[in-house]
Length: 141
Image (tube, rainbow, N blue to C red):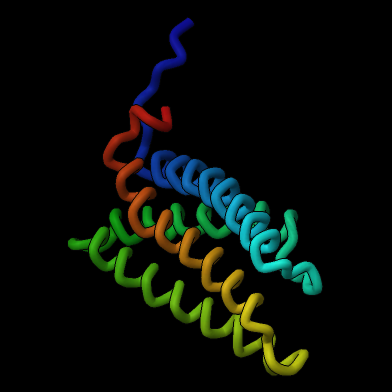
């Protein structure tokens, strides 16, 4: 039986997002554990293992789907996608810190570092790794 079939643009985008999400989850876990250990920041558990793993993977898969629509329906889709990911990453960082401040008062500086660090890892991988994997589908197939 031959199971070789050509990947469609949609499947390459989703698989690229999944692969980027798995890498983002591992990188975020290492970052969060290392930063908490170095800074001795154990008080706030809003950024725990399940949030990091599922958040990273789901965000990157969503970015893969959005990447497909940008590439498939826009003329310079990759460039527009990268700009949009950068803007959305900045907005998520800003809203994450502002919403925390509005709900529970001032956010500790250590919490800000965790939010900024984890979102920059996800945003950076979504911005650069997903388009790279889309073009080089032999890595993910």
